[in-house]
Amino acid sequence: MAAHALPPLRQGRIRSRAGRSPHHDEKRIGGNPKMNDLLKAILDGIYGFVGNYGLSVIFFTLLVKMCLLPLDFKSRKGMRKMSELAPKQAELQKKYGHDQEKLNRKMQELYRKEGASPMAGCWPMLLSMPILFAMYGALRYMANEQLVKQTFDLILTGETAFEPFLWVKNLWMPDSPFSGVWPNLQSLQMVEEKQWLSVFNSLGADQVAALAEKLNVAELTAASFAKGNALTATIEAITPLLPVAQESSYLRLNLLVTELVVVDNYNGLFLLPLLSAASQFLMSKLTEMQNPQPAPAANANGQQQPNSNSFMKWFFPLFSLWICASSNAAFALYWVVTNIFSLVSNQIINWKLNQDDKKKAANPEAAVKGGLK
Image (cartoon, rainbow, N blue to C red; front, side):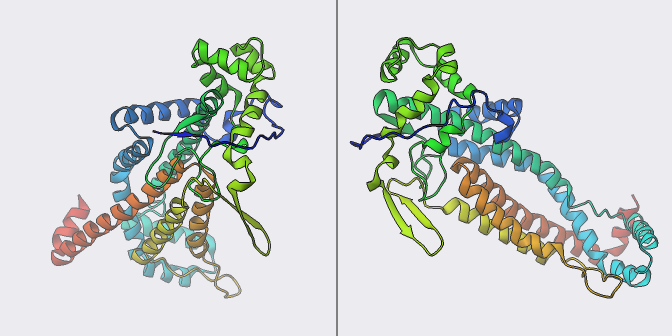
């Protein structure tokens, strides 16, 4: 961790909304409390070996993806089987398109005969999505805790230690030139009271006494910190300490419809959000090329129905860009590593399936016997 001291700053005061609602629902910010604690324990355990939370996220992601790799292989194999059935599906649609019930029955018969399943490509996503949401909640929970620690450090000592990773100065803030490296009021106001108390209880007696003096409180305990005005006062006390409170810390870019504010002491270069969108688009494009889908069926009027795959090809990259730009850099890193691993593993799996297809083509009798086992 890199320690950063604060420069001389202009005093200021911003009214805080913290403490207005003393109890925040942890599920509101994503994740389950028990799952958050479990994933945090795993990441902390990896951190104990590698000494950096960025590396911890990478190793954890690789571990999860390696565990899911056999299922990915089976899924890709099923998707390829479905692609091979595309001509037969089109023939059935042409023949029974006027009778939807009969068409569905014939499709099911085709799937049973060929040993295929329309759900073949869905299982990895059905497992990956809960893990994705769990990581979002856990990393946001960890980010909130780290931001609270940095807040107390700033109030008590005027400096704090960040968690850097490559070009990102503070892993717990977004990778963006529009986000400062220091904790900001908006982030701190989202932290639930439980996490403030957890960090407060970890302070030593001398630190608590110093904090009480900084907040102009006669006596500061966990109970008074939570139920009194100390929590609100803590967030208000950090306002004049934040570099982003200075007008000189901003570079304002006036555009036609909005105004972008580039923070002077910015936290990142916006590379992780861009990488997430680019890798997501590339993954969708390669999947489309390697597993071509049959043309959408025509409706009763003979008009071709819209293809949802075309929409999803653009939706997921844009969604990736948005979620990674608005989340802490640790979660954006998890998203990018997940996409890159999927890109590489998919190419390896497709190469293996191509080799298997060549062997079947060279020895069709063995392929038939293998399929009868």
